[in-house]
Length: 207
Image: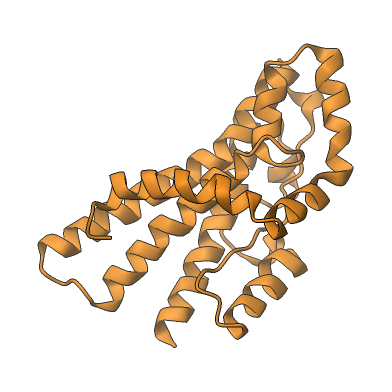
């Protein structure tokens, strides 16, 4: 039970830091919308998305799922406040996944330190392994080039404006596409090999 609670806490912390990173990047690039909305805080309440932050994680725990997943409410961003809207939107979008990569590295370092100390099998070691894994999952998932995921906004930076505008219209169908790919097994087929390679590099062969 303690292991599950710690994993839920790490998941919530990871998705909240992801959103804070978007807001912080936007603020530094000239858009204070997230700050004015009270979203640059570790307090989970302003970040709660009923489905992604509460219902989905609880369902996964109740179902005994081997992994946890979720998301927080997206931070509001107003590109009109940016000095270079297209470039700055790309940078703002990229900061979310990069925050998860940074967290994964931190958890991996803690994991390796505990291994060196000979504490393999203890709950902290398992929690650090989960922390690295869930953040690599968030990193890879959010970089998928499917609107409204962060990867789509990074991709649009490299598109001509007219093509980017048309591509952005897919956003209304984005989650339908994502869930369709998930149930067809395509999403896992894309994500898991990439995740495995990164986690092997971070955690080593013993993970």
